[in-house]
Image 1: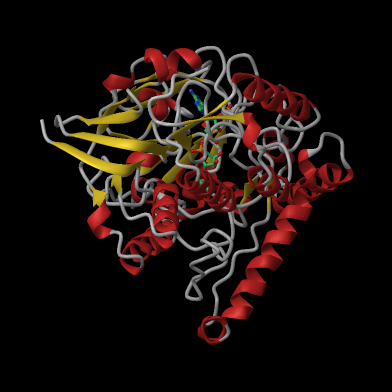
Image 2: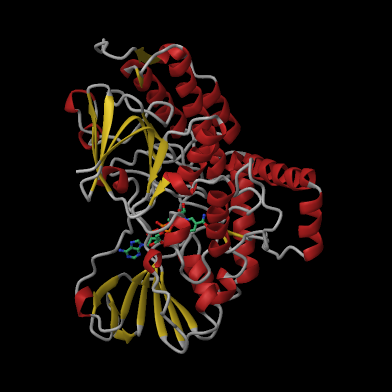
Length: 490
Ligand code: NAP
C-alpha cells in the first residue's frame, strides 16, 4: 500500500473541487491533492454530453467571479464550452500536479486526529482536512421498467451518452421532461424519423432568451473586463430579484406562473396538447425549466407526447398502459439522478467510528450546509441544502470555499488542529431551515427529486444567495468545537 501525507484532500475534480483547489493555492496552501475517479476533470460537464446539453444559468454567471470568461459564445453556452472552461482553469492555475485522476476513493476514516483517505487501488492519503466535492447529482437514476433487458435497441441515460451514437433517421423515445429532457428533445427532433416524449408530470417552462454573442461583444468584454463584470452582476441581480418566486404565494411567484402560462398559451395552439402540458403544482415546486424551443419541438409533425404510464418494454419498443406496443430504435432515459448517493457510496467514518450513512439515515443535513457534527475537519461543497433553484450554484461554491479557507486560517493562527460543529448549533440551524422551507415552494408536495421520502427538502437553499453569502461569512466561532492536537472531545 502506498502512503502519502498532505494537508488537504479534495474528493472530486468537478467545478467545486477545482474552485476549492484554486482558493487553497491563492491563499498559499500548497499541500493538497484532488482525487478524481475519472480520467479527466470536469464532473457534471465531463459526464453529460447528450445533444443539447447546456447550463440553464447564463454563462457569464455560471463561471467563477475570479475567472471571468469574455469568450462565452452564447448567453447559455453548450456543455462542451463549460468543460473547456474547467480544463482551462486547471492550466491557468497550474493545478495539474495536484490532480490525481483514475483515483477512486472508497473510504475516508478519521483516525487519531487525521483522516485516512483510501483509494480502490490500495493507496492511502493521510490528511488533516477532507473536502467532499463529489456533487449532489452524479449517480443516474435509471427506471426499472418491466422487460427492460429485452429491449434490442439502444437504451441510454442522458448522463451516459455514447459519443458514437447517431440518432439520424431513428425512432427515438425520450422518457422524462425535466431539465435534461427539455434540452435533448429540441436538439434531436429535426434529425430523427420520429420522437416520442414520455411525460409523467408536465413541468413549468419559461423562455430562455438564448442568443449568440457577436465577435464585437466578445472583444468588448475582453478589452473592458469591467464591462464583463458589470454584465455578470446585472444577470445576478435579475435572477436574484426573480428568485422572489421561492416564497409561497408571493407576487413574484404569481408573476412567474402567469409568465409561464402565457408562454404555453402563445407557443401551443392545440388545446389538447396544451392541456397535457399544463402542470398542476405551484411553480417552483419542481425546477422551473428554461427553454425557447421545447414547446415548438412538441408541435413538430414527427414529435408526439405520450402521457400514459409506461407498462412494459419489449424487444422492439414500449407499450404504455392501455395502449399498443410502439417500435423504437433508441430509448433515452432523461430520468435524473439519485441525489447525494455518491457521498454515501464512500464509506465515511468520523470520530469514534461514527458512520456518515448512519447519521444521514433519517435525514441528510449539515451545519451551515458544510459540516456534520462528529466529523472533524470534513467539509462539503454543494452539501445539504446548498443547491439553488433560481441562481448560479457557483456563487454558493465560492462562498463555501471562502468559509473553508477562513476556518483553516483560524486553525493555523491559533495553533489548533481540528474543528467540528457543536450538535446543538447544528440542530438549531437545521430546525430554522425546516421552518423557513415551509414558507417556500420547495416545501414538498409535488414529488420533486430534491425532497426525501418524508417530503423533507434536503438539497435546496430556501433564501436569496446574498443571505447565503452572509450566513457563510457571519458564522459564530462558538458554534464549533475547536481543539488542539491530542485533546479529547468534550
Ligand atoms: P429530473 O429533473 O429529475 O427529471 C427527471 C424526469 O424524468 C422527470 O420528468 C420525471 O418525472 C421523469 N421520470 C423519472 N423517472 C421516471 C419513470 N420511472 N417513468 C417516467 N418518467 C420518469 O432530471 P434531469 O432533467 O436530469 O435534471 C436533474 C437536475 O439536474 C435538474 O433539476 C438540475 O438541477 C440539473 N440539471 C441542470 C441542468 C442545467 O442546465 N443547469 C441541465 C440538466 C440537469 P416526474 O416529474 O414525474 O418525476
